[in-house]
Length: 270
Image (cartoon, rainbow, N blue to C red):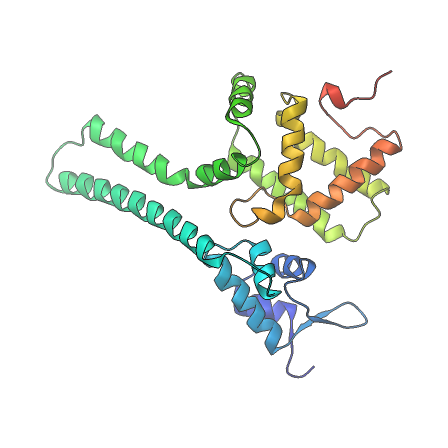
């Protein structure tokens, strides 16, 4: 293995995390050699494949699309790239408009002119528009699985919910997902798996507290279909983690275990 690289060296050279490399391996995108002790070694072909994955993700392809491309399966690459180009063009236009507003404000400040409230509000609104790119991407995904009527019902149900930091909430999902992936492979019926399931449903409580059966089923369908929108948005966890939690939840419920806060329609009837 003199011409191979250990995973920590690949991390150093590519800037990717070891978690990302293990995830690519789990998705069948790379196949590094494994020693008897389980240590991963990456050859030249593996390193080239990693660089290809990074390049294709930058072009807007999801991991599912990249896998199909590597497997030489049919894929409408022109449509995918065209859609990504349109998204980037929209984003570039928004950034250009925001930059123009900032330049205008700086010019006024440089001339000693007061920065009026209307200009400042325009700056703030434009900045918020740029920051909502992720929200727009989520809407594109959600529109595929929920009707406008279902989305309106959900907004009504969440209207009185207390506000909280979306970024902090996403960070909690990422932290839990990282711990679950580090523990895999894991018996879905084990006590450790049950603890992860309870953490999962505790984090999910802001949703489950207000969800209807239709919204709950739509959410399960959307995440089970992650392969088709992976890379467009970041839910905070991978499809591997979702699949494990789904199996572990089913095992826990079959055993009659408490899985944490769930909607009333999912609670066992006395």
